[in-house]
Image (cartoon, rainbow, N blue to C red; front, side, top):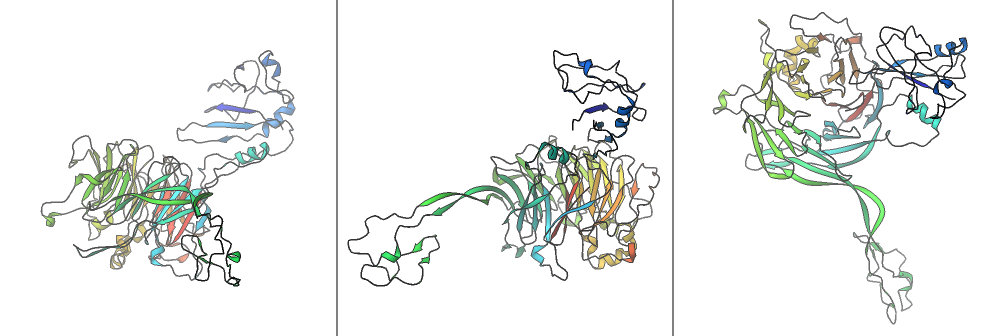
Length: 599
């Protein structure tokens, strides 16, 4: 089947599709006809005769253009036009021309997954009914690398597990199969790659303090020479890991035949020779004796390299003894050479190549600790500008700093905080205002923050207030006393933003997570469950409320746990999640299980 593609510039008046061949243009240097699109008149589209190839240089290209008969008009009606939304807002319409005509349905699918339906993709470590989860197996960190081809998770047992993407590899097949795959819905698929023990439990003898092995954060570094590099941290120590494939080395055996090695007519031992730890058989046992005249030639064991490979993780550097308080964040700089680590009172700047020295760039510790009013809760480097970073506090504020101003960044460049509503202050105000996580959008224009009740989107060029606010736990406000009693009010939920910046997501209780549309005019607000049926507890999205005087959008105020009469399960909480950098795919952790979804 011969297919012709017409790429139409948008916007154009598609519905009226007026065709003529008089004003069409053709470029000899191109293999496809060009179309002149105007806003004030119908589009003129030349169609190429299906019985001929495209015009060569010595032929008149217009001789290959056919007029639209009644038959070809019916064929045009069978075309499906799909708008493809890209980050740069450019939309193109792809039409497929079927010369066979008739009522054959030609299927086209949107390349970018901006649909509203979320589907289950994969699960790793799924629990069976009634299975008890071990504390060390609970996932405590999730991170995609910049390419999206690798995913890393850390758990409370100090282990790091790596997954690699499998759906990007070349697949054989005919051209027709390749074209069908082009129009099929694709989503990232991952498989287990390797795992290693990153941290062990330690004990600080000077402070009589146990340091648990739990992985707090994982950050990918730039790969080099086919090897993967990443940073992992627990409460006190940061480690720099290199993961690469290495060929397996084996020890060749000696050329002694034990059945012929006994020269005194003694029977050979019935049991096989013992295998030593180094891989060599123990032929020289107590029953062994050399034959008369000795052994004419003896091949000593040698180390040989086989063609088999295995993944080896090696700790390159250890960054320790720089934090007096628990590390809550690490973040890579866009220069690929430095990273920051943050605890409750300080932010330190490191060079990846230097493990015994760091620079303190933020210090909020007061002279008198009784004057302490807020602590640092999260810190993140700007994704593009290596001199800028942001950190959040327990008072609900975000500070943007520029390291070019001074060595110690005591003063901030911009302060993002929402003014407190009059008369709304209570005992829980400061607790629920504490920001647990912040994330920059991929272009660095927006900052996404998560406090206990809401998810907020900030424009770094506008510090008067958030551009959008999404209600996540508003239905729990009457239960704040109970949440305080069982310490659930101190849970730290992470947030994530899609690679195109059009969606944001965060976790909740009962293994639920929320996805909101962040684009202007979007009313998307979905509640999904971390299970194989994510929409099992889907609820109706209410109509979008009107904008307030502060131009703030508030959505999602409905209760995600009240549907079907189910109460919130505060023991099952979805704290950690990550968004694929280039695809509409989310990875989230529910206890020891890793779930992946796509849209």
